[in-house]
Length: 368
Image 1 (cartoon, rainbow, N blue to C red):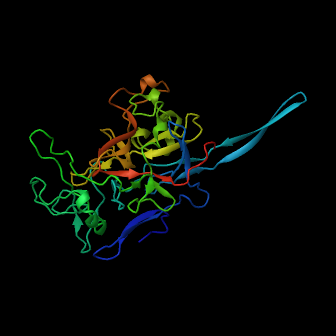
Image 2: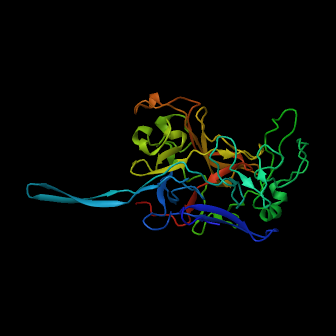
Image 3: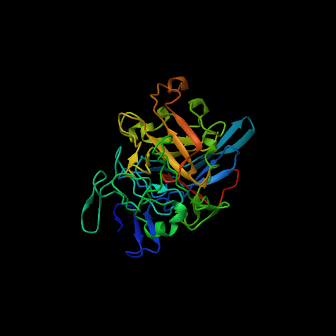
């Protein structure tokens, strides 16, 4: 199931044709050998967290990962007979491509495979060797409930709260949850109702949390340090981001690095950074296709789920998108309202598929 020669891979397995439970196997270099397990970040309230360097299940897609180790050196300052020795530390850095990663419907433990196309899915075959076609009669991924070819007022659909047992037994099936269908409400609006404690029981990790031991899905306070005021910011002067001109352009292909990854500083000192892939999301009711995965002619977006919910229909997430053409280091030349957004926490339908960035259950001390 895992190609050991590749060094990275992921698979989802179940117990039998009638699954009782299932597991996600992720073969990765992170946390082994010379790689450090975590990157330390602080939020707007200066609380520290240890965060995985990549999204859960992330693979590089064959591009080499570049890792710069943590280094320390001592420097002696001498004036006359006076001498002072100071130790300087260079923080580690991961240089990562966009790669791809699984997408999770909020509250579910089972992943749906990543994509590398602007609007579509990786190819998928059933056990008889038949190819699933996203726009054909067979859904890719397959849907949890059979329903009429033409939407008929949620016929054949159920709320998450009414089918938790069915979801566990069908880890490979996308939950086609109820949506609105009235004269005044757009038909794409999700009305799915879900328990709000599936990933967090008063901050404690639950059995549905997809993260490995020692990690859990983060809450919506973790990434508030990415903006100067801890809230959504449309303008670059409110971001703690790394300029494209300061990133290693020879590592990336294409004209825009920020259509592939977004690099953000871990705290206001700007001594270390963390990278997020611009990888779009799986739309909850459009064949579960990966959308807003950036192409040459339109903006891309990135999303990461949090473990807490706003209400039974909407849950919190990190959101970011960049569509600016940078000219030097002057923020005034880096786009305007509508082109850019870093939102440390927003809320959206819990049936969409976003990435997950695990945070350690053991938090670091406040000083590095």
